[in-house]
Image 1: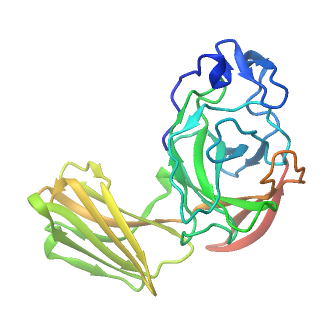
Image 2: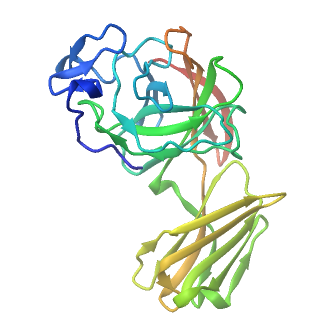
Amino acid sequence: MPKSGDTHIEGDEKGVSSEGTRDMENNEVISVSNIDAGQGGAVAKLPNGVRFELIALCEHPSEGKKWWRPDGTLLGFAPHEKLNDSDRYNDVPFYEVVFRIEPDNGTTCKIDTSGRTAGFSGPHVIEGRAEGVVNGFEDAMYSLVPVAGGDDPVNLTFLLGDESGWEWHAKVKSPVHKRGVITSRATLDVSVGENRKVIAHVAHRIENEEVRVIARNNSGKVFYPGMSGKGRTWINIITAEFDHLTVDDAAAVELQVQEFQPVTFQNVSLQPGLKTDVEVVLEREEESGDAKRPAGPRKCSN
């Protein structure tokens, strides 16, 4: 995931000086060295040791506006000057969401908002790079989340996965453009694009798992698609283009799956100063013999 750069806002007109952050409520300057970036956030600790912290939210665009903790408590300062993404979707309100994953060793995530995410089919994350990041937030992640239906508290569900957790479901081996694979849940075919680049075509009915397409060359190097278009009808369609890999050099194209770990922050406030009782619920699976069974929701303490 993209991370914010190690930069700072300069000048009082920006709201932050080299000495600290400017309090958006009473215009007082708070020393950056005295700010605990993690204090007051909602934290979920996963069974695999990953620590996920939901830090703060603000309406987008956030310039000059108040930031707040997940429970509505005012943060008192802006974690960054500006988020470099001002796109909107059918005028639905966007919220800037700041969170942190530790350790971030290839961990990826998507966000769902319990049916109030507008204009998107399923969990998603819209990543943005922030300018003018305050000390203590350099390792934070910044995303835009569209939420419809007013300012009532919302449930934010983050789906967490790991780079090492992907398993292949279908594989086409060299010559990749002359073979196809059909499974009970998916089909995978490859065509030849401009300059003989690899173009993978997937149709699948895989549910409750994340899906991606990768390719490998004859040396075993992994390639990720430079462009991946998805369509949703009665079946899921993926077209993935590998701009830097030709069909002559491709050893295999794989459709991979992974069950992401859902972590839900319930009753997240969408208004600064509107206090809520945030609860963290971790849904997990426990193994019973060779079979897996849902263990049900488990509340996590911060």
